[in-house]
Image 1 (cartoon, rainbow, N blue to C red):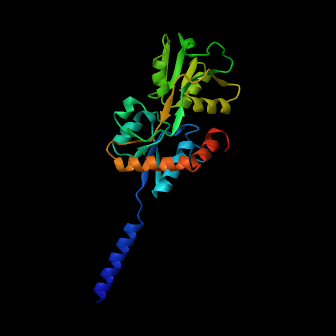
Image 2 (image 1 turned 135 degrees about the vertical axis):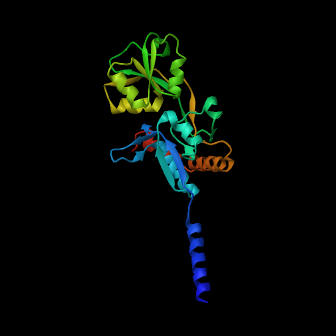
Image 3 (image 1 turned 135 degrees about the horizontal axis):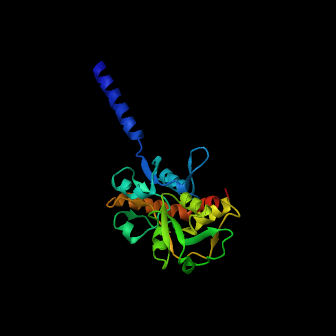
Length: 245
């Protein structure tokens, strides 16, 4: 009888453990793109995308594990199974969509030009002829810069902050980057750098995941729609992108 009771207790413990276990949503990001993803002074991952994916995970009942990784390896890391999804201010493009699936867009943006605050030579893409442009490697800013005619040279850096540093030091004449990232940099360095003109591309961010995971894709799209519909998205937008933090 004792053996039967012991066996039943063990079975109950195993069942309870399995029932209480929650699948973890592993998330890849390149946390060098404020205000969307960055590491704060306490070493914590913060930003619009970080709060958004944590809210997605909460609503799906999945603990979120965020993995900070280099941008140039972020899609290969997803394909290798190092994480389940990517959220990293990633523009949906045909080339990327050939390798991964994307959720419905969750943010609209465009590329802008950033120059030193005392430089009035550059106002639009045509003014970049004969100039050196700094970009983050493999981004849509990089791709947009490559389409500008007459550019002297494009210097691609591992992160956006490194491109901004090159601009401040005079190693580049301009940086091409997503609009709100440029605005954040301008606000962080008043009187040093400035945004000129208006966005000259139209782009949309999406959450990326491996092809074939239709269940997760449906769950993500449904949850994003709920977050937008109930006002949570607007709260995050105000917190991170309108300076409400």
